[in-house]
Image (cartoon, rainbow, N blue to C red):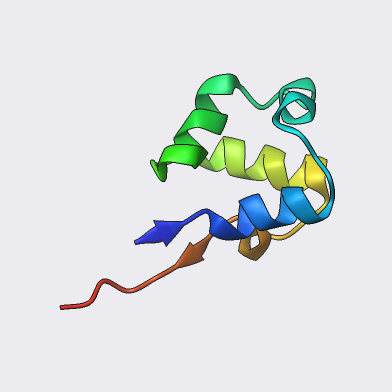
Amino acid sequence: MISYEPFWRYIQEHKISTYQLIGYGITPDSIQRLRSGKNISTRTLDRLCAELDCNVSDIMVYIPDSR
């Protein structure tokens, strides 16, 4: 499972609002997908990393499913 918890921590620590993300060109739909834990495109991931000057690991983390 992919978790976007690191992303929410990152923007909170850096005092970045979702309104600012929209100003960076991140669509409201993408923000909602991040909130819901749904898939985002690699284009969105690339834009987030570029605009926030961060790494992929600052956006998401893989959590193995317990079997």
